[in-house]
Image (tube, rainbow, N blue to C red):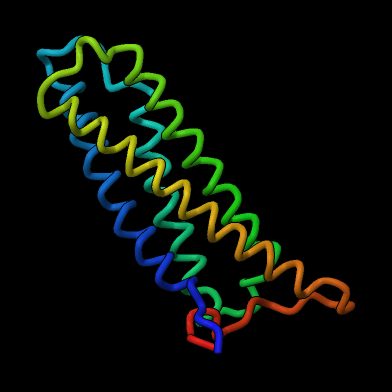
Length: 159
């Protein structure tokens, strides 16, 4: 009896997503304060976008196999997984490069928050990489059957 890791991975992805969104929103708010010149860095803004995108991706990936199995096509699931994984990779790498450029100036709560957002972003990328591999395995298993059936509606249940 094999254990399906999809739902536990989704839960951790959602928790880390909320953490990254909160941390990056705090950093963006600090940069957008009148005492600081300019606005928040584009790297921080991109991670905010990625967090919001992830909410939509998680909603599609969790709910569509149960509520609308016809739109839970294996290639659609794989595409959503892969795009989200690429967003997380680009986001945490861009933020890490930004932090490394200003590491000597980094101090206080904002600095700790931006570092934590980068670390949680890296963990999110690892989680999305794992779930993308699982989706790719599902596509590989369903190939050569003439027609590609929608994703298994019991994708989150233990097998």
